[in-house]
Image (tube, rainbow, N blue to C red; front, side, top):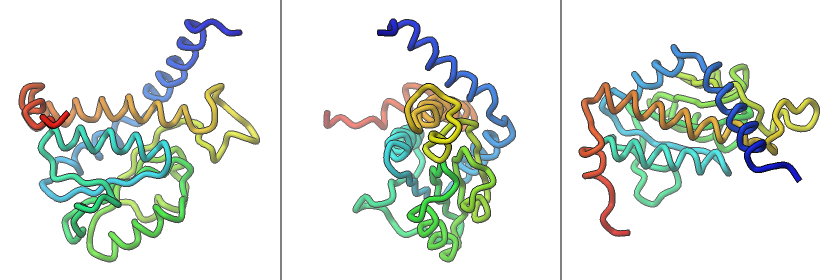
Length: 186
């Protein structure tokens, strides 16, 4: 049995390497897209969807008009709005359908992916590439000891926290103003 400390060091090392290899210009472009006052809808499948929910919550705490696709209170998107999707493997039929629907309504598309050459990239107005193994590449030539898409999802969580810090600073928000938007129904 492998020691917990050794496993943690290995997992954190892989996630850290992904963060250091992430393109700063792509991150800043996404920050700029989120700085524009507009409605934002967020979507991701599976565990990527859980990471996107975490990001949605933090963007709400920053004061953005943000919603999860599929929630009953998600408003329609139109011109000037943004659909932010996670599509680690570069193509998922649900992401493709949602992106095409939003694009037809006039919304912009931002995608977070590990496969920048994937089909969903052709629909995007902004893209953040996280250079990590996903389930798209975990069988033939695995590059991570973490199972399936866990490296991508772990890197997403950390990168989203960095994204929120960048947005917070540019928007003039503070921990206190964010906390004031936190639910009191817990």
